[in-house]
Amino acid sequence: MQRKLTRGRLFLSLALLLTIASGLALRRYGYAMHLPFMVVKYGGSLLWGAMVYWLLATIFARARRFRITMVGLIVPYAKA
Image (cartoon, rainbow, N blue to C red; front, side):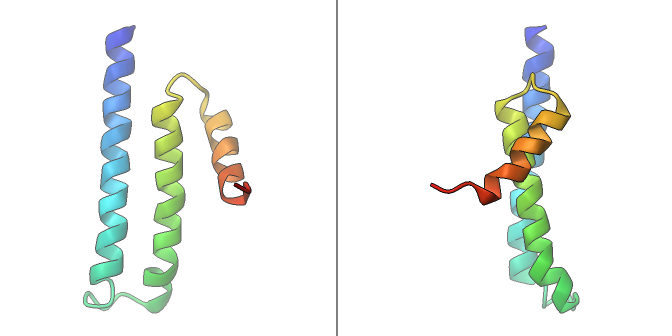
């Protein structure tokens, strides 16, 4: 069981890092690749939301997807 959990977290961590790299690349090279303004502007927000999900899924690896999604929807609205 421990090995399966570790492999899952490894996959989630990799997805998290790829999402961060994609967001940075989109901001840096989006206009140079002649992507539309809407894709460059709001694509980063979409990738940020995906990054929050991957981060929560990595931390709470045993939680159900629905619970992780609900917590992920609350995070942007939480006040510090």
